[in-house]
Every structure is written in C-alpha cells, then in structure tokens.
Length: 482
Ligand SMILES: Cc1ncc(COP(=O)(O)O)c(C=O)c1O
Image 1 (cartoon, helix red, strand yellow):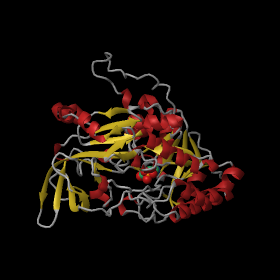
Image 2 (image 1 turned 135 degrees about the vertical axis):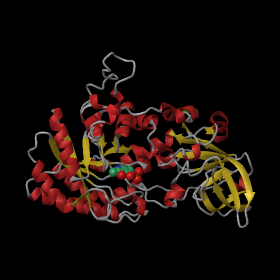
Image 3 (image 1 turned 180 degrees about the horizontal axis):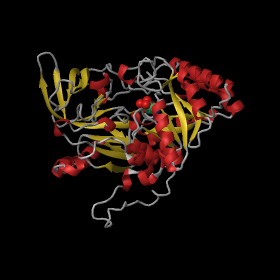
Image 4 (image 1 turned 90 degrees about the horizontal axis):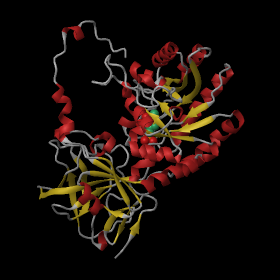
C-alpha cells in the first residue's frame, strides 16, 4: 500500500488510514465520538521551533496568541517550550495564568479592555477567579486561589487608544502599581488578506494613528504609574505576502526615530502575528522566509540600540497541528451536486462560511489510489465526486467545502478537516443547540482528552438560574465601571 507522510504536520496516511502521530483517527473517533478536534503535540513543537529558530537572530521572544487555540493544555505545552502569551480579554488572561504562565510573560492586547479586565491584569486580587463564592465565608469574603494575591501586573499592555492608556494609568495609580506599555500603531498598510481580518488599514478600528503617538510619549514620559516602553503593530491574518510586514516594520522604525529625536527611547517592538500557513500545500512563506526579509531591517536596532523584539504567532503554531474529525450522517444527490451531510459544520468550524476559507477535507480511510500527497482543492485522482460538504445547521452558510472533488463517501464514514487547529474550536458555537466538540491531544502513542465534549446540562445551566432583579439592584444607574 502506498504511504504518504506530511512533513512535520503530525498527520499521515499509512496503509490508507489517517494517523495523528501514532494513533489512527478511527480509533480516536470510536473512543471519543465526533465531531472532535485532534491536535498533534509534535506538530505544535515543530512549528514553535521553526518560528523560534527563524527569529532567533533577533533574540525575539514568542508570545503565543491565545485566541488561535485557547485550550489550557495547548497553552501549557507552548509554555513548556518557552512561549509567553498574547491575550486579548480577561478570560484569556486567566487561562494563561491557570496554564502556569507567569504574569510577566503575558502581554495584554485588545481594543476594548474594560476596567475590570485592566484591574485583573494589574493585580490578581481583582481576577474573576477570586470572585466571592457562595457558601464560602460568612461575609461573602473573596476566595483567592493560591498565588493570586501575589500575582503582579502583566508584562506588557498593548494599548489601542489614548482613552485606554488614560484608564490604565489611572487604575495603576490607584492600585499603587506600574503598568508597562506598548502603543499599538495603525500603520495604514494593506495586508491583502480577508477584509474581516485586515487590521492595519486606516479605516480599521485598531491601533493609534502614527501622528498621535508622540503626544502620548510626551504626556506619559514622567507618569509614576506608566512605563511607556514600546510600539506594537499587527496588520492582519493570515498575511501571505512578506511586503506588508516590511512596510509595517518600516513605518514602526520611522516612528522610533521620530520619538528618539524628541528624547523618547523605544526599547521594545512587538511585531504581532499574522504569519501565514499552508492551508493548501505550498501557498504560504515558511517562517524563515519572513525572517530572511525582516531580520536585516531590525538587526541593527537590536544590536546597536538594545531593542527587544516580540512576535505574537497564533495560527502558524497550531493551524496545521489540528484536524477536525467528523462523521458523515447522510449523503444525497441534489439537482446539481452531491451533498455530504456531516455532524460538523458552521457551528464547529466557522472559517469557510465567515472568510470563504479553504480547508482540505478527506476521508480518514481510503483506497491506495486516494491517498493524498498534498492538501489541494482539486487532487488529480480517479473516481472523485464533486461534493458539498455540509453540516446539520439550518442555514445555507453551513458548509465546510463547496464543489469539492472527494472520494465517494457513505453514511458512517469519517472525514478529516485539515488545518483546523487555529480559529476552529476557538470560534465554535452552540447554534441550533449543538454541543461544542471534544478536543484530543496526541503525543506519540498517547492520546489525551484535553476538553470533554460539552454537555447539554452545562449548556442549559445559566438558563436554570432565572431570578428577578430586586428593586435595590435596579436602584442606582448601572454604570459599567468595573
Ligand atoms: C494583536 C494580535 N496579535 C496576534 C494575532 C495572531 O494572529 P495569527 O494567529 O494570524 O498569528 C492576532 C490575531 O488576530 C492579533 O489581533
């Protein structure tokens, strides 16, 4: 039987059966059910090492963008490898901390930080993990999990507006602490990616206009609670061309020089994420290709000015390390096409519907002539049937692939949706009251359930907590100030 191994991505067909490292997906599906996300620990390690090695000449620190795949155990794995974390909400902040990541290895980005999130990022006693626990303590005193009281501020806030910077300064001042800050700039660079994931153009809500940065450095230069150390830029995701990164870096370096001319030293550059991956084989630059073009631009600043470099890869560390396993529930011939109806769909993986994203989809068990050698939209193979791969949701946006040539599959067959490790589970929903999938991490021959399939009882629990608000609760005007 023919064999194919996809270098470094952790998944391979052997004798016509798809393996995640040393475990067949058929066995995983029998054990855990479907739909289930399956990740390869080895593939995550390789992706991390490749990215780390590429930017090592700059001594760059990698902060994993938690939003890509926030499972606690994936965070733990990346933390073990040496990654810091990039978080964009109070929830992600707590996840990173629960995964064992020290606060000074966390940077906190995001355009709409609330006072409550900022406080938690400055002082652990404000963490939502320390909320009063019903039945604990007579006066409703706060229950602090170990270590929370000692937890210091995050290593870096990436601020997105003058308003946010003022809030962080005020809250840090009140708490008697100091916030280390980088200003995210909007470089007005087109990343040539999907409109919804383009973040560095002037019309996007992200970052501070370049001309507004100097006044911020002037204003906060001597502020007792603020240490304005850096600049941050993130232009979109995935950015398949290298030129937009070069353009963004040039804008940032120009600004560094302008600030220096006014006596403000920038000691940290955070270049964000957005590094692309091969959804289709060979479509994206490898990390070293990005680095080859960016390192020379930055090396002098690092060596000569002692500037620290941070990057925030998300997708590039986990996308190809994950597949979504789904079982065919029904097939039917439509007027113009064949439908393959699966138990996964827009609720489990929204990327095809939201971004018209391509995911290679293939049966988990195939005959020899159907063993794929690459992830491509239209493999050159005999006996393929053009298929719509759809889910059970009551919307026509519920598809995983459209007009896709596939081996003929039947009810009960398993399909693998490849490159689903990033923004897959992270964006899963309960639409139509489907439960969120399970997650499994495979490391060699060891498979571990790292998230149980969501249970209906847990999903319904908040609705069982119906209660009328008391007049006292409704009394003062409800301002959202923490
Ligand atoms: C500020 C910031 N950093 C990093 C990332 C991660 O991007 P990617 O997963 O493409 O590496 C994102 C993605 O939205 C982001 O907004």
